[in-house]
Image 1 (cartoon, rainbow, N blue to C red):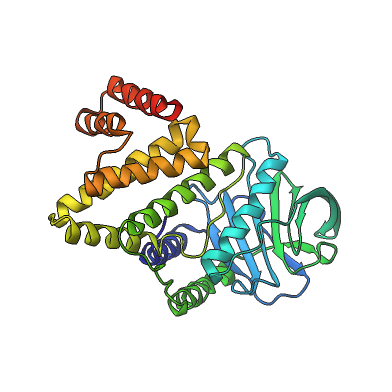
Image 2: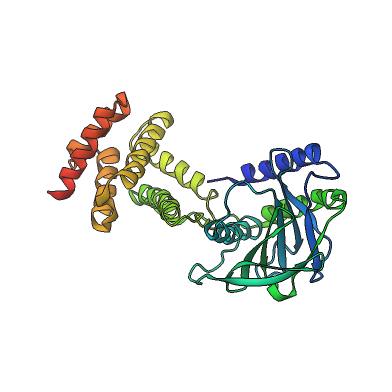
Length: 335
């Protein structure tokens, strides 16, 4: 999860790299927007290696309703499939979270069909995924893969044209980045959910397990995980609150409190990945509760043997210790 400062720094690094690396004429055709009229475009991304991929964007990047449209021109690398096209919609969902601090609904089905557009007045057909006001389509033009992602723009209105000079698009990039940074800074800081006592740890762990679950489920479906508003902005404050709480109630040094919180989080996130029974909410909730009570309050718990086995894992990290730890938890779960 990326913090505000990391996100802004990444934008600036990307802008600097693009300004240093881009050539006025790349080695392959780059396509831009002829219709509909969405104003001047901007170069938003460039691949790391020899400009094999360039994205131009048009419209309002901060409006959830649009209109906004990006056109990615790339040399083909692998066989493109509809799964890769579907992931472009996931990427657009995450872009609006990053840029505007809003979330698209996640219960809108995506429908696959075909669409027709013109590129340099030549009619082309390609696959299109539609999801409410969002859509993404892909065309092959002169051995270049062109992927369009749009919100609030009718697919039937799309007309593309070859871009002969990228310099105007690059010159507008600094203004585009400055606008995104300013919008990011104006965004209200998410408030920590109120919590005291053991709920301080439960909330932190629930946040991290939820993040992990979204990633795991997305990977299983061949999708990109959907980001949420607050990802990366709440994680740090939640962690520090848990450390301070343990430092205060356990009379521990900050370093010792941080080690304990780290150990709890690492054990439970690894269990979530490795233990099949963790998918049972009742057992998962009980494992979280017992791990917190054991680590924070040193209370006797039914999973004590598994907790001790985890301590051996953190000390030595041997594969056989991990195996015993998982087997001990499995025995607890089936008792």
